[in-house]
Length: 138
Image (cartoon, rainbow, N blue to C red; front, side, top):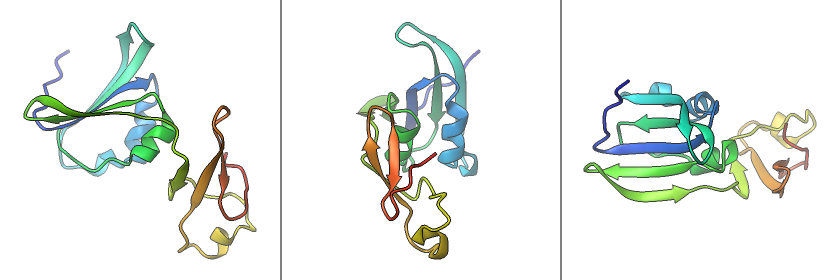
């Protein structure tokens, strides 16, 4: 299998095997007008298996979404065929308009124009709580 090099774009590496399609959906990569390669179940000495996503364009990426889905992801920015920037992610302290509160009595249920804000309550167990009603995310 041959996956071309990226001259200017983004490589999402060290994705936990199986998470690439979730990332594809959350980042709306299907709406891009450039090449996007998803490579699943790649052998990795560090992880056993991993996924990789290559985006053949320099686009804005929501690092909070990536950190929420898989905090082990490495984001490589490629310019003129060379890695010019690298981000190692972690769980974000706050998520804005990523999760939506399931509590029917939450203010966000009756005021949909409000930003949906969730705050990290327990890093070890990856628990986020709604900033308005403190309901736990599912």
